[in-house]
Image (cartoon, rainbow, N blue to C red):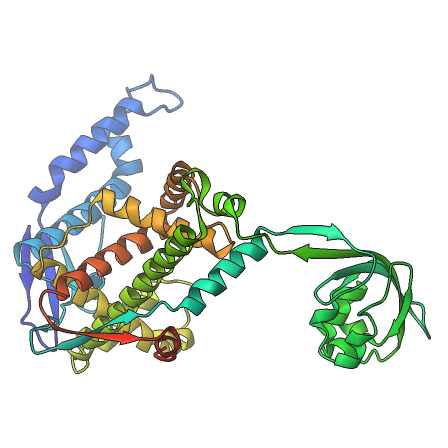
Length: 442
């Protein structure tokens, strides 16, 4: 097989492959023989169909398959041998590829357009300065977290008279209409109009309160939810309603004692309040450190991408490649999303260069550990602060079975390793900052 490449111009070139009979005849003959041995045709014993008939029936298809295979292998070898950092995939050049005649042609020529990545340097140096934020954990933050634990592990009880924060269940009836909702639930504390809220505070089980849901909530979404009607029905609803109080449920926060400590931390729970506060503070500090790490990564990425700003790309080729490899994408959608795609490509190229520069390798253990951390954070969002390690491991393993999840986690691990490597290269300025100030940075 003869492979030629034109001179690179604007990061593009044409690769031409010339495939002679000697390149494919042996493979074609081998496949035809295999087909003949398996072929079953009326009038012939199995495996005894004449070779000429087999070739007539299957020859063109087999030749096409072999040629496709040879072209793919040839392109891949050319790219590897010449260490070409190509963008996307080679695309057929129909203008330079002669029309194929399978019946009479023996030598085949295929031309492909290729685009290569531009030269760039994404590496940061000691001249670059990045800030590492140290987020201060205050007594107020510790107190708020402890109060959150007390609320979460508190208990519900039935009351006879409504106090602030109670949940009320009963029958809501429209005064001048037919809407009736049995088992309606409301919390006066969530009412935006205080005059409506005060109608419930102090009311007892069995009492009937007249109120106006629209005035109380000021939102058709909340009104429709409370009354069990559609949002459209709630829109423009100004009627008064009666509410017959059937149940009053009160929540009492848990006491700050050893029972609470065990509910929060399990078997290895602190034994006294001082130790509990210290554990809570350490937990918050660990979370703040992760937030600081995340911010450092954002700043590092911004500094790296700044070095990629003025790099030129073969835009027309990239757009063509995207459209040819994504059948469902339209030209209009491509134009809308292309700038974002180009930024993602720049970041991908920068990461590849930095991983080679810093000799970064993503191991299976790294991926599994990060997946467990992702799982832990997801459980924390639902208030599950201390999930059993084995359960986290199983959840993470299930997550990694999903291709998209796995790919995303591998990318995050690689990025985090790049950011960690940069800490030994760039100039780091540590800065103490309050949680409120840190939040404003975003």
